[in-house]
Figure 1 (cartoon, one colour):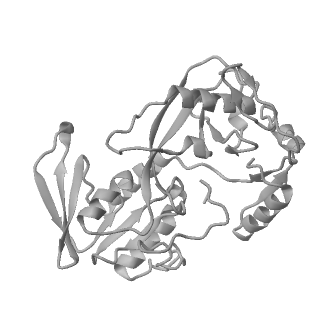
Figure 2: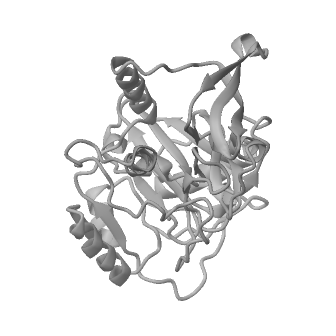
Figure 3: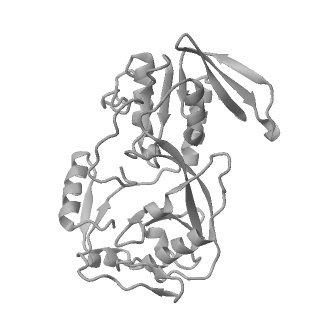
Length: 337
C-alpha cells in the first residue's frame, strides 16, 4: 500500500511474474473485503496540539495495492541459529565476545586479523588469526576497520538508528493474525506491520524517511523506543487498524542499519588498496533478503569458484557493488531499493 497507481502496480505484477511470484493488484474495496480489520483510508498526519488528524489535500489519487500471494516470513534470529549450526557441523570455528581491532596489512596485502576478548565487558588479551582474506562485515562498526587498513570507499555509509515496536494482540480476536505483512506509505503514514502467531504480537516499524534518519555513534546507540516515535508509530497503526483496542503497552527496541547515503545499495567486493581485504557493508535495511546472493558473490570473489553444481550461485556481475564503484543511478531513492 505504497501510494502507487494501479498502472504502476500492474507493471510490478508483471515483473514479479517473471520471477515466478504470483500477485494481485487490489483496489480499496478488495483489500478491506479480504481483511476487514484493515483500513485503506489515506493518512494526512496528526496534530498533537489538537489531538485530531489533519485534513487531506484535494485531488487524492485512487487507492491501489499489490499483494504477493504465497509468501512467508523468515525469522532472522532463527536463521542465525541455523547458520551457527551449519558452521559447527562443517568444523568452522565461531568466536563470540571478541572485538576485532584491526586487519593486519603487510606490503598491501592482508596477513591476519587482530582481536581482543570482551568477556564481562572488559577488553582482554589481544590475539591474532593469520589469514590471507578478511571480510569486513562489521555493520555499523565497519568504518574504523577499513580506515585502519587504509581502505577508502566511494560512497558514504553511516550508522542509522532504527526503532521497532511490538503490540500485544487481543486474546479473543484472531482476525489480526490473518493479516499479511503490510507496508504502507499511502499518503503519509510510513509504517509496516505483521502478525506473529506464536506470541500473538503485532510487530511494526518504519518505511518512511522521518523514522530512518537519525545518524548515531554505534557505541552510543539508545536501545529503547523514544516516546515521540512510539506515539507516531501508534497513530499510524491505529489509523490502519481502527478496531484495534487502544489500551495496552507498546514495547520494542532500537538498533542500527548502515545506510548508504548515496544510493541505499550495499558495497561488496575486494578493496583496491589492500589485496585480500573484502568489504561487505552499507545494506541500508535490505541486506537480509540479499544474503544468499551476497554470500555467493563473496565466495566466488575469494575462491574463484562456483558451488558444486552452481545452483546456489548468483549470476550478478561480481564487480557490480565493488567498493570503488560510482553511486548507482536510481529513478527514486527509497528504503525499498
